[in-house]
Image 1 (tube, one colour):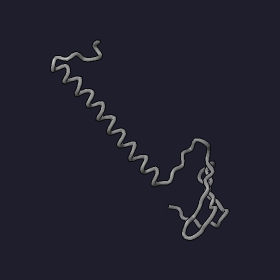
Image 2: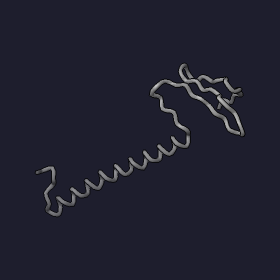
Image 3: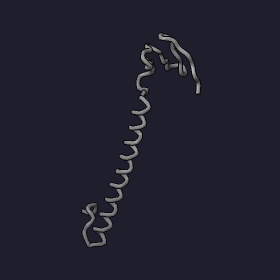
Image 4: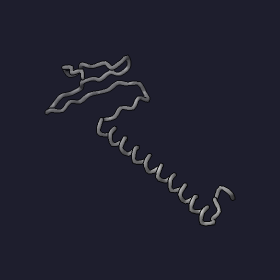
Length: 87
């Protein structure tokens, strides 16, 4: 981890095209501005973690849905029903 001391108005460069600017400090809170290329997604960490969790849950549900479709088709076949894809 790199730890730097900055004053209001000073900045940090990340790579060639990302600049993090310290814009304000008051009551234990720091405000920063980020200049980055269009299309680069920037999230607060807690928001990013929530998005990852929601994506994992959605992926699990998608797999479960596909599994239920397979099970339904197997049951239909074994119980003498026609598979919809054969119509």
